[in-house]
Image (cartoon, rainbow, N blue to C red; front, top):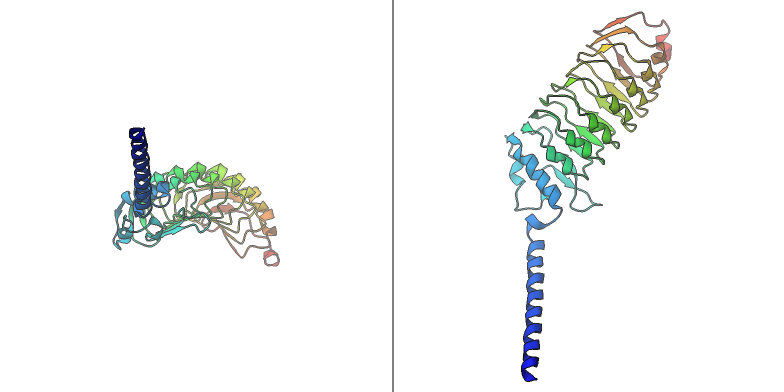
Length: 275
């Protein structure tokens, strides 16, 4: 009987020690920067870092395990969703390389600002996975390829600037579904094809610029539906036909230019009464 009791006590002691060991390990893990927070976001950021080949200002130096990733240069985490990346701002840092497809894993990202750098290659279509994205600055880089169609899946987007790159191909028709879009800039690229009539569905649009591309065809009359449009720039393309007369009824316009195209016809004599 005494032997059985001793055996039970040894077993209980062993279980207690095992439980204490597990708790101790958990405590050590929670205090280790690599194991804190959301591992998906951390791995995505490291994949983004791996694609950067030139970092003259050494902004990536802070992207290491000595501090939490929410404290890395250019990274802001959400206050509401703790330890989830809500903003990535690496603008004007002289960075060169390509944008990692893993950017699409930052599912809580609301602002992506990579403007004024030297990023090359295509815009990863995985950006279309960022359903919370509101602001996308990729302007002033050396990006190539076409505009990913599935950017239209970023239905919260209200600012989109892809200007001053080397983008080719057509403006995707599906971008006309971005009903919250207020700024849409594609200037200084090598885009071809026509201006999609579907862009007339961008009911919140205030700024539209496709200056200096190779767009052709006529100005679609559906753009007359852009009642909130303020700046409307179509300069330096290959547009033809006439300016739809309904454009002159958009009383909110303060900047309008279609110079250096093949537009025909004449402006109405009472144009100054419209603007």
